[in-house]
Image (cartoon, rainbow, N blue to C red):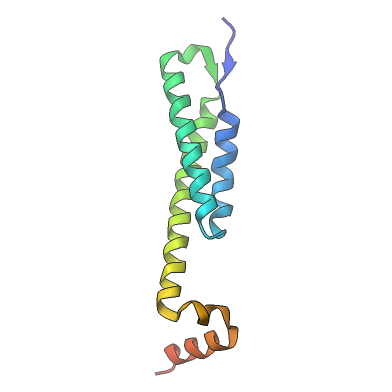
Length: 110
């Protein structure tokens, strides 16, 4: 029998890779790409587990899943960071650079 490539193995890897740099886009894109990659990876892993001799590209699935997990964690951390900033300074302060610098100076100077 001729081995065939696992379905979506390259897509899983690409989504896993893209989930890491997109964590700075408010974290939403990173989390979305990561979840899609993990769902596709679990489907591909089940397919590979049934007949491992029929498929190649399982390394891409494993690496993509790990990168997707990292991307999700970074996205959640970025969202938590943004929520912390908003709760500390307020939304209006974050949009006004001069006011933000004043608030930061107030925090730094005793």
